[in-house]
Length: 141
Image (cartoon, rainbow, N blue to C red; front, side, top):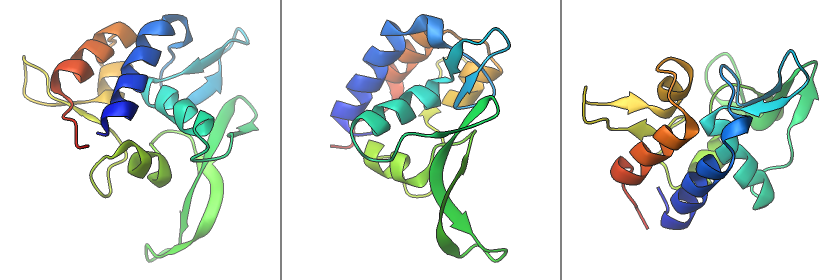
């Protein structure tokens, strides 16, 4: 992951603990509060950096611009449909490996853990995810 993006993401996670949600990149919860998962916070940074446009609200979930594919996997354009995984342009901007739509967090306990799993399944806080990212996500440039 690019050093500047990694630092900004880790800082953002630590500074916005009350924004944490699960299941979607970005959404409005049942109480009307705007929530994001840890990957959604990275998407918000990408929007602020001008990498992608702001997401579109579809009922209660925000959808980010991402590649649209044919039934055969060929990229046919772009549309606002990504609600759960990192859009390609965000992953590229962040310096993730080609084809990545999540961030691998190597945990000391069990080998490997994806950021989305840490957020949604393991119930880790943004601060805990930031700590893992700081220790284990390699800097590529």
